[in-house]
Image (cartoon, rainbow, N blue to C red; front, side, top):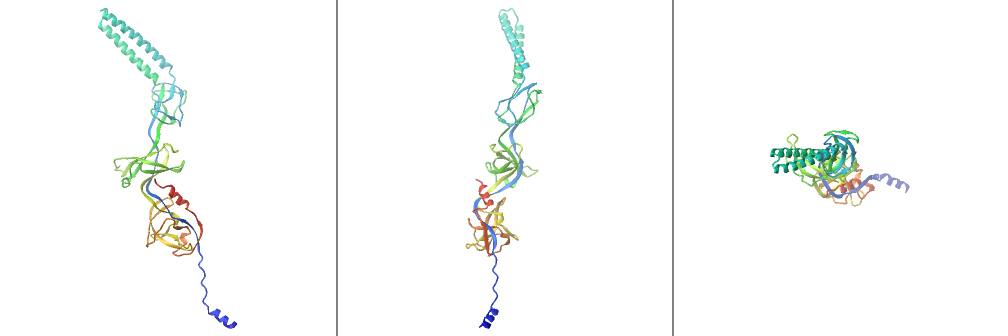
Length: 353
């Protein structure tokens, strides 16, 4: 009857509204190498650097290399006008020849007892002095040819062709830039974890990617004023870095290999705890898992452990966008899922070999 239907409707319990799922983006856990490091900054330097100078006076006739050129040890890099020096060599060469003939003649006369031993010794001394003068003249002529002291790169040219130079006038700066070096001051507590050959990562303003370097040597003493040890880092010249460049230095002190890595955006702080939200097997909800953090680098975080008997595994889907609005068991709707997030791709790419 119509009246009975109305009574039944009025007596029924009201239906509960459905819980709206939270829209999220997810990404899978991956395995990669994560490292701890000591970060600082420093300036690149050459192992050897020298200023090439003139060793005699004269006018600069020719410059044979320019800034940025590579030179070999002993390579001629500049030439001074040498007319005066050549004339001096010719003059003293002639004097030596004359004095030598005179000495030979005096020796023959001495053998015939015509001249004394003192006369012969006097001419002998004149020959020796003439040879010394010739040697000085030849040295001055040789010094008009300016050479590189070692193999390296021309950093600076100080002077132009036609300039008058004196002994000590600067011509070039040359540096051995293969490899380049960085002196890093590392706190003593970190040094026990460092060895020669260990990896170091560099970042510079004019180089987009991270540059790999390595520790070449560690100083045997601690600076008592700072409590640090000087660590010398070698940088391969093949990378586009220059002496004097300011770089950020990351000295790797330890590596956890093949560990679970998540994007930092997957972490949710709850008091002193860190949580991640893993998508359940049905894909419709999440479970909250308390995690222990390991090493961190940029937007990558190592998940070193999970609390409450729950285990994390490679491939588990974690919420990386929308996690702050979730609770344990909350329904979700996945809007985006990638093979890896850009942050996790970076973790794999920057693994320490």
